[in-house]
Structures are given as structure tokens and as C-alpha cells.
Image 1 (cartoon, one colour):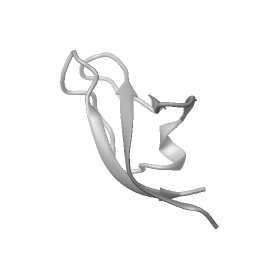
Image 2: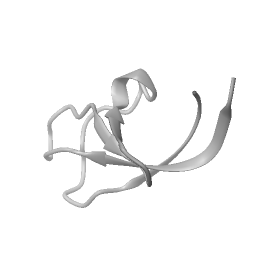
Image 3: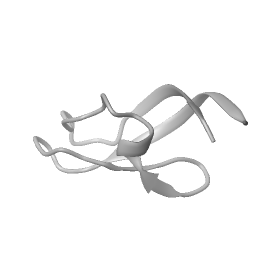
Length: 55
């Protein structure tokens, strides 16, 4: 198992809606598989989320 620490993950979505899409430096992926607690998009801009996750 490969563990990645403190990776910048950028959520993509519209204000007030649930977003399960994100991108990192390499590709897009389904956010719900990795950050189950990240939910509503609160700002218009894309924000970085520091997270611990494993591949």
C-alpha cells in the first residue's frame, strides 16, 4: 500500500451543491471515495484541501 501525505486536492463544484469531483496535480477522480466528509461547496473559488489518503 502506498500512502500519500499532505497532497493538495482541489474540489470542483457550484456554490451550495454537493460536489464529488476533485482534481490533483495529476488527474480528476471521484472525491466520495477518498474524502467522505468533504461535502458542500461554500466558496466560488477552488480551494485546496490537505488530506491523508492511500492508494
